[in-house]
Length: 87
Image 1: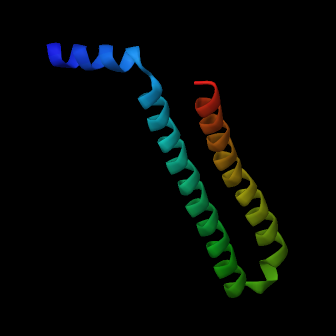
Image 2: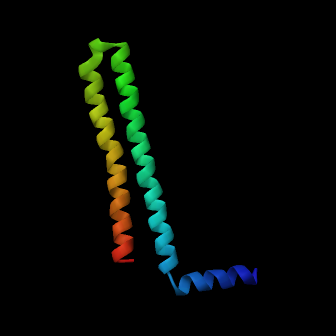
C-alpha cells in the first residue's frame, strides 16, 4: 500500500509524464476514428454495389456518418494539443 501511495505522490508532483500518456491515448482515439471512417465508407460502397437504386440515400447517410466520425478525431486532436501546450 505504501508503494502505491509513493507512486501517486510521484505522479502528482510531476505531471509531465501523465500529459504524454494522455496525448498517446488521444492518438489512439484519432486512429480508431480513422478506422471507423474507413469502415463506414467500405460498407456504404458495398451497399451501393448491391443496390444501386439506393445510391442517393446511401451517399447522404455515408457523408453524415463520415462527418460524425471525423468530429471524434478532431476533438481528440484538440484535446491532445491543449494537453501538449497548456497541460
